[in-house]
Length: 354
Image (cartoon, rainbow, N blue to C red; front, side):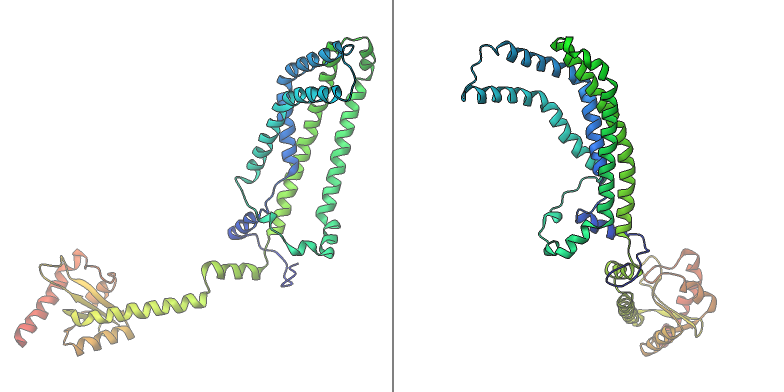
């Protein structure tokens, strides 16, 4: 229900509504998809990178253990050793960290496209309201997040446990293995755990993405009143638009009436239609419709024509045909003969009058 209007949100979100939500950073983005993509990419990289990683790790551990009898454990030597170990481990893990950042950005772009907004970081005093804050803790979203997190931890933990438990008997032989064999065993088990975890995360990501999209669609829904208000904002108030159109039509009508005194003839229906024609020999290719109208407008055109001594010619078929010609356009070629006869008649009348 809408808190403001009491109306139920039954209307699908409009393009403007979606754009407004997007500008605020409110988009359907699933964190589980990001996690799954990062994990899959890490496992693929690990498959190819693991031999090099464990080879370098073996070299580092062998070097430390080989020099363990020579090292003096002092306040000054231990920090130096730690810096050396952490520095080399950082270099070894750098490809994984870089891949994680790249895949995290790629997963977000794939879900929501390119989006940069500072709106979520803007201060909002309503967030300081303790009542509003408590509502978030007991909301449907928080319940879903809790269930989802517990499910993910439980399923991933169970899969990891079953995988490691299945290798328990082989782990008993680690005491008789050298460092190289121990690292190979750890690498194999780790890869199995990661591989099975990826499968779990893919399934969770599919369900979470579908739910996130559904939840966002529900959140963006609008009431009928909100849809009407938005339409008024984007398209304009229909009453105001009608007034504007009325003013524009009135102005166009006045401009048209101002052209009637310049016409050579007004062809009538005789009472329902009036079409004013003007022809300037040498400047126009054909007679042009400068004014036309029906009923009251036709009557006004005839009145102006009489006031300005513009001849009126009654010709029903020609008047009907000319009425179909757009205002300001030349008459079509198939009407040249009929209109020429009318103009010849008008010019003969003017000749007689002069």
